[in-house]
Image 1: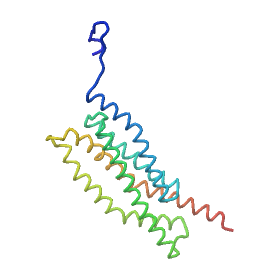
Image 2 (image 1 turned 90 degrees about the horizontal axis):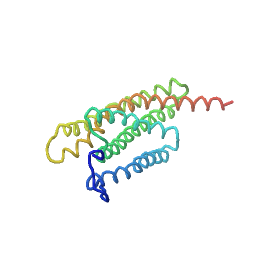
Image 3 (image 1 turned 135 degrees about the vertical axis):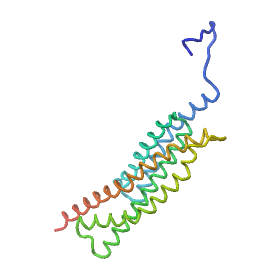
Image 4 (image 1 turned 45 degrees about the horizontal axis):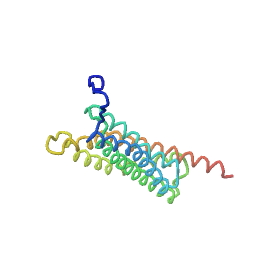
Length: 206
């Protein structure tokens, strides 16, 4: 447009209206999104008192982001305020499911410790498997409920669908990839942390 539009001397133009509002919103979101991630990390640290566990639980947001970006690209949605809102909601859901998984893993570990069956790395792995299995059905039910409620929105064409579709797309894509992470990788990282802690404890024991 700039190359085609020839203005008389003394005249200028600027984009205004919805475009101007969208640019302002994007500037705010560039600050809000990192702040959201930092706040989530801080809350996780306050709950678990461990930087390592907080980092493990932040990882689902990365996997969720990859799935959200993939579906956003497949559906040809540009990054907008609505899409950003979808990502913020997605990050919250992904971290929440990861937290519940870690809580189940901790409970299984503590049960074995109370029973005196936490003496080796094999015991830690068995506890992790037990906790992950208990979390499997609730996690799948959560994902199924979210997908069942949001996928129909992607095929809507009525009033408001142009706003709701970009919000739903990142959540749908991200829930699929974050589920894989929470069900498989979170228990693996949890076992690695606890095995490392057990080795350090045994090395200090005379």
